Structure formats: C-alpha cells, structure tokens
Image 1: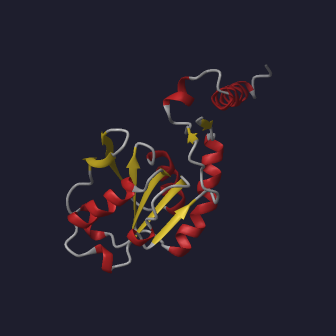
Image 2: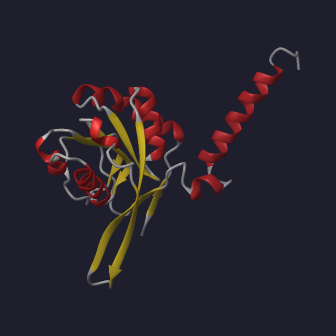
Image 3: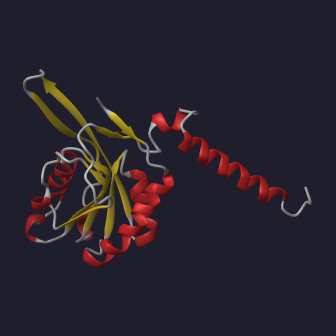
Length: 198
C-alpha cells in the first residue's frame, strides 16, 4: 500500500541550505539548470544561495507496454537555447527527486548533444536532488558529482508530495498548507497594524 509524505517549504529550504556549502566546495557550478517542473523551486532557492545564473528545461516521461514489460522513455519538451551553455564549464542539474534516474540521464545526454566537445571527458556535470528513491538506478557514472540533500533513501512504497504540487496546494485540510497560510496571514496582520495601536 502506498504511503504519502508531505514535506513543507521549510523542510525543503532547510535541506537546500544544508547542501549549498557542500555543493560550492565540491563542485562550484558556473550555472544551474532547473529540471521542470519539480526542480524549479529547489533550483531557484539554490541559485540565490550560490549566486550563479539559472536556466530552465522540461522533460516529459511516458510509459509504453503492458504490466509484464513496461518501457519508460523521456522526451525533451523545452531546452536551453542552442549554444547558451557553451560558455559554462561546470553545469549543475537540479531536480526534486530521483525516482529511476532516467530524467537526469536524459538531460546530461541532451547537454552532450548541444556542446561542441564531449562532456564525459571534462569533469563538468553535477546533479542535486532533495530525495532519492531506494530502487533508483546508479547514475554516478554519468556525473562528476551528485548531491542528495536527504541522507536516507525514500522507500519504494512512499510517494513524496512536494508543497508546490497540486495535492498540497489545494488541499485546505493539509496541515502544512494551513500552517503556511496562517503564519503568513498573522505576519501580514502584525506588519500592517504594528504601529497603529490596534
């Protein structure tokens, strides 16, 4: 039976802050590529901490076949304008989760197609994710550096629902969502009326 985990924005920011120094010291990226949609929020936060340029790509996953033989594929929906990444030697890909590893592998292969030299001989690609599934493919050979923010792998039966996903956004009975709205409202109230004596 599938279980669900609901990290808050605060949880996510804490994981990213704890990882930023390690990324800076061990890879020091020249730019960040956010893999949408899941990697957009983490990449934006990390971009502010590391103060490097950010670009956005989108990868679509699809499955074909039956229950006995399912084939999963990744299609590039949106990519960085051609030759844009040429000026950056050290590129950091950011996503929210490694489920199988196929999305990040597809991204690094696409980057190889858009560069005039072979990236596999230049120690220049890295990946950062918040979580990794226990059964994920080992993608270490595809990257020179990989940072997973959460040190424990996510069990197969657990589905992580991030705060920017629909379930957390629209579910008013979700205590994380309510807590964010409530605290924001209280802070705004105090800011507006702090000098009015109300």
